[in-house]
Length: 287
Image (cartoon, one colour):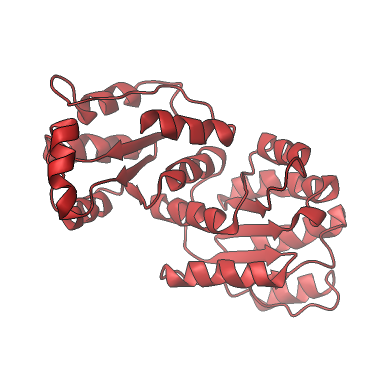
């Protein structure tokens, strides 16, 4: 699975500092690898695929300590008890009760991913942007339906959408025409104007009621103008420690250059709206 995770990372243009497969953990375990990675300057985040752990207490103590310096994202396989014997024969470690694992991860502040691609997406977001300091998300979209889907996913995770302050609404209303200034916010009338887009995102990211932003754009809106507007606000977001993620549909080579521009400025771009939301949920968990 390590090779598969590395392939997923490469597809997202994420560098791999180390790739380690532990086999049956006969003479080396996860805790040993984590101790090494703690001091490895090339490693900015750690993604783990685990079936079972031989020494859970030592692992959690080490992981909890290292997680304060570098985010650790875990995908736990063999969740179903029927897979215990398969995990034991595969790695030599008992999978154990999944609920106990999951509760322990939460107790030690370790991020649990619920799919393999989430491991990569969450790591990408945390390496490129500061972790969210709160759970109030603002959604800006050039497509109303996409905004609703992202909002549903966020709310279904038990997290609140940000409520824009009256000051922010007043300021944004001077920029946006023909839009209901709610969250999710429809910015389709302004996304093709880089200066207007910059002003809108700046006003919202500076709102004390907002902790993070996801900006969604269909391929037809994902162009150099949009990228230019967002690059201008990237430094403000980092200074305020409020992450900005971007969703754009991946259609062949459309937006490839703009994606490179945004990610060079530290703004991660995701090809599916659910992936952008799940990555931001991971940012909230780590923050």
